[in-house]
Image (cartoon, rainbow, N blue to C red):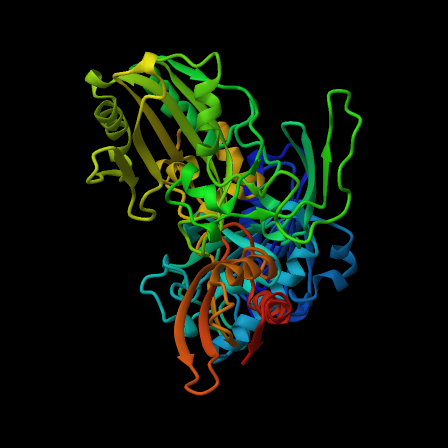
Length: 593
C-alpha cells in the first residue's frame, strides 16, 4: 500500500482563520514535503507512512524529505495504517481539516474488490478524525474512480466505485479535479510498496469528499388548524412531515422558489396592476369527494390527502362550546370531509367575493399544496403553487394576453403552451412535467361585470424553479443541507451547482400478491416514501401476473434508490429495502413473494 494517507488544508486555506492541521501519508514523503512548503504559515502537516522508518529511509530522497518536514514543524509518523487512524496516540486526539490519500493500492495485482474494501475502510477511519466541515481527498489513477470524469470510463463493476465507498462513511463527492503533480516540486510517486515502480499519475483525478447530513426517520406530526368557527386537530402522515413549516416563501427567505415567484410577479406588474394578498389561507380545507371536481376538474379523489380529525372543536361567539372529542369512525367530520389543500383553486371564490377584489387587477396568492402522486423525478407530493385571479374586459382578450406574457418569460426555459379545443384553457408544459401550470378563462360572476372574463392562473413554482435554475432533482428544493440555500444567498439568480456529484444508484425489486379489487397503487407509493426515507427516486412496474383460478394478482416493481444531497450506501439501501418489506404487509393487504 503506497501513499496510504495524508491530511491537508491546502485547498481550503482561505475558508478558515484559525490554525490549520493537516495529516498525510506516502512512501517517500515527497508530496508532504512539497505540501508543507507551499501551504504557508499556520498550516501543520502530519505526514504518515505505512512502512517502518528504516524501510522508508531506504527509498530515494526519503531522508531529505523527512528532514524538510521536521524543519517546517510538521509531524512525521511511521507504521500508520490508514484504516485504523483512531488507534494511534498522535492522531486520535486531534480533528483535522483535510485527510488526503494519494493513489491508494493494496499492492501487487490486487483486484478491484480488495481496493474497494481498502477505500471503504479508509473513509470510515478518516471521518473519525475529521472536523465537521473537513474534507477527504482521494487521488486515483485515470479510470479507477468510476465517475464520468474518467477518460475512458470503465464499466461500473470494473471500477473502484469511489463515490459508493465514501458513502459507507457518510461522505459525498463535492468536487473533482485533475491531479497536477507539477504543483508539488520534488514530488515523486513511489508506486507499489513491493515494487520500485511508480503509478501513472498522468490523467489522475483528485476526488474531494465532504460530510453529508444523515437520514432521519420521519414521524407523524400533530397539527391544529382553524376553519371558520371550527378548530380541527389531526395528524399528518410521516411521508409529508418534512414538507411542513419550512417557510420557503417567508419574508427572510432566499429560497429559489421565492425568487421565481418574485421574478414572475415583477414581470407581470409591467403589464397589469398586481395585488399580493397577504392573508394566510389554511392548508386544511373542507371538501366532499363529490364536490371536488367543482374546484379543480383535473383532480381525482385518490390524489387528495383526506384527513380524519382526532378532535373537532366548535366555538360560539363567546368561545365556550366544545363538540365531539372522540376520533371519528370515517372521514366525515362535524361539517363535512377535511383534506390537505390539493390546489389554491379552493380559494378563488373567497378571493373574488372579498370587498377588496378589484376588476382590472391581478390578485396573487401563493402557498403549499399537497397531492398524492406516484414517486418520480418530476412530481412531488407537496409543492408551492402561485394563484393569479383577475377580472378583465373580454374585448381585451385577456387569455391570449396572459399566454403571450408568460410565453415571452418562460419559453427560454423549455416551457411550451398548449391551448385546449374549448379555447378557454391553456396548459403550460415542460419535457419533465406536462400540465404544471394552467391559464383558464371563466365567465363573469355578476351582472355588473357583464362582458368581462375571470382569468385564473395556477403555476407549480417548485417545478418552474427546477427549470430556471437547472436543478436536476426536485428533492433538492427540500434539502436541509445549508450548501443548497447558501448558493442562492450569494448568487440569487445563478445556476445551481450540485454539491453532491455523481451519486450512486441502486436497483432493487419487490414483488407481492394483492387483491386487485382493494389495491390502490398510490398507497404503495406512500409506504415507499415513508419506509425508505425518501431515498427512492423512481418506481416502475416491471411485471404483472394474475392467477387464473385464485383471482389474486402478483405485481413486481423496480425501485431505483438515489439521493441528490445525502450519502447513500449499499448497506443503507439494504436496510431501507428490508424496512419496506417489513412495513408493506402491515400497511397494505399484500403478501410478499
